[in-house]
Length: 369
Image: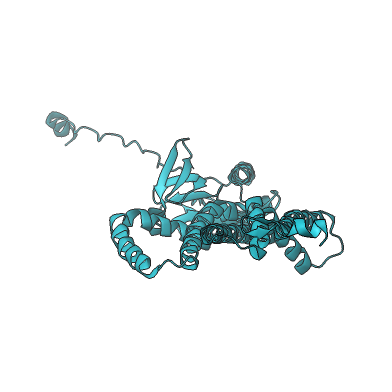
């Protein structure tokens, strides 16, 4: 027998030296190839060209999953593969099995959370408008997904290790009911935050009017939403209260509508009154970023002839709306004064009534008779 073959048959910890060397080779190859494969996937992601959208998404997802692969998990896989051909002590084998099961389900949870985050990012990329809604809801969605994923991973790991999870599930169910009754307000806000995240009625940066509160959304959390009011202070409102209220979202405005009235004096000639709608229309159409809707003499009030005018500002910004309204008001004043059309004052002008003359004395009346 050759010396090297005799050396390979030397028993170490119950296994020949050759088996130990083979296990070492498997460990080194595995622990080298797996990180190398991870780098190759990431490199292909950076150098891809002329690929379809489906291939782009598949490569991006594979690269994201590779980046979230733990080196500890790769080390565990290499050790597990290397130990397959070794006769180890049952306690050692049990320890390796428990460690590998825990590492496997931890890695599965990491991959699942990575896939959820990837799906959210893809939704944001495909969105045609601003991504503030996705950004504001990402925290809530990831919190709920993480709670569910890690709970399932923990239970599945226990089940793979031979631990009966049915009594645990029953105990968790009873405890969950008791906990839900104790913290039902917090759970209500959590469910409301999930509703906001999925339905997306508003996002960060939107101007809201909630009952008597006006402000801009700064943060959407798991329990509350924070608004910055027009006066500067921060207003914190629970998510459940917001969903119970009538919310006006001015951040979704595509254009602003303006309606105003002109109270014209009754003494204005009919010909001048007939020319008012045309003059107002000309002024509005000449103003940038506006669209004329109508101008009609709709009401004859006890004090004035009332024209009602409607136009739209095609920009959602309130400053643009205020600038357009100011320019239109000034030009209407100028135009109607040139047409000698008089407005009716808001407060009626007081009329001074002269006191009655005093009656003449009886003597004077007698002289007149």
